[in-house]
Length: 263
Image 1 (cartoon, helix red, strand yellow):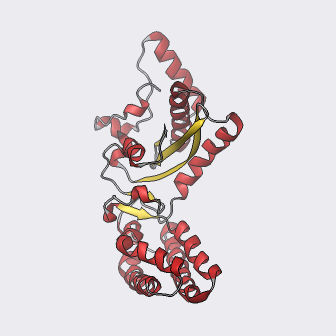
Image 2 (tube, rainbow, N blue to C red):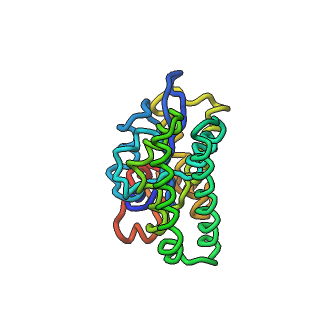
Image 3 (cartoon, rainbow, N blue to C red):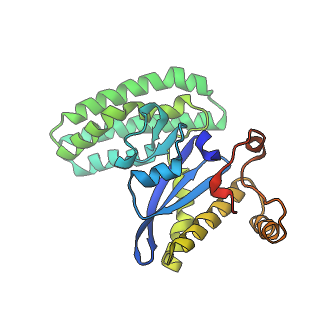
């Protein structure tokens, strides 16, 4: 599977199959996006999606991801900012901790944007800015875990064991500090679900998985979706070689993604 060797943003959202609850999962890499629909939001569905991948996964704090190696996981800072704001909004003893953590995240993004626009090197960001930020965040989390606000203490206590997952993006090229890429791809599926009310069968779900995978991947590769589908249908009818969503470099390395085999 191509996505197994690439850092991937992962997310899930509700779906309906045969008028029963299901979940649509997505893994987003730089050039390929893979969708799956499963009847569970549990670990088995996530394992189907990642298919044994040992690359970095960017996720939210949903518990199904907690078994991942903390050094091969990136927690979404956009979600964390909402958690920090919630600490402030609740008031009480957690307010100061929330404000301090939010200020740290402001500093993080301010300098990360400089990395992205080329005015700050990743190596300088990692060696000069991250150590101080990491030290401050760790101190605030430890203080928050002992504060009198139960919800703030719980959030900080949950983050402390996976604190290393807050900083993976600083050392691994291709990893972002947020899960925005996955959330953007999920939005298209949500629009489909709202207008079509999900799928009626396993066969329908397989179609949705594949067509969403084709559309999203073609967009990332700047390929014409209709042309790809025409080539796929033509190949099926004539026995010609089918088009592939696997990038050319991966094809040369004999990387095959079974999700795309019948596209």
